[in-house]
Image (cartoon, rainbow, N blue to C red; front, side, top):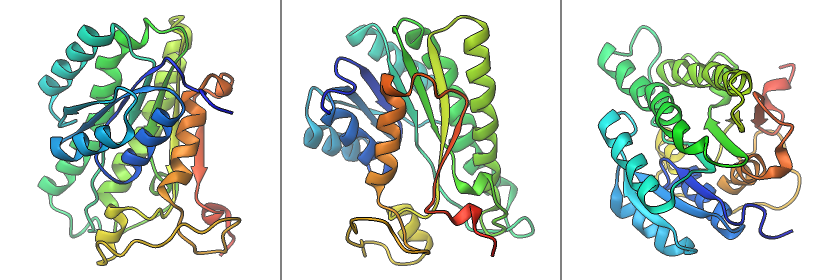
Length: 253
């Protein structure tokens, strides 16, 4: 199947690397015009140049409301609508509740909690102009399990999970043609995971087929789910939390 999101305009935050870059590539491959945003514009531009199909790179600090407003205004000026919003940008802070500082906690939540709020809030006017729009919020298995060392990260991802459901119901109640779902990856081979594990740049090859317990997924595994949720194939999937973790969260030990 090709052209699954042909003609759609997609905005991806944190699109300069990792999961975001994989999401951008998958959406562009299936026909979407992708706005690649990242706090590092050079990274976003490299991804936009690589994926083609009219991709546009814009600088975006998702914790900055004024920056969001300027990006949305630029998308409005160029395209007049938005079909797909992928709130992907994130950071990780390794510290438990006793050790994390208030500044660290606030910074993590500013990016992944407030950033998703701002993205949804300010994108809605453009999303409402689309025929069948989709918001995809990147949460985590950290929102579903107890991970003491990722306290701030898990708190932010839990907020993303909850906000997603509220937005999905709100859009239905107000008659907006917008779905909203959250994606909950487990351990995925990304630069952020490598940094947390102290092995930056040591990428593992993508393994084909069913993975054994404990194996990490590839960014493309998450991007394939994002592509499905972005397409009209998932029209009956709304307010859901889709877990991509190779059965980690359901194991009895």
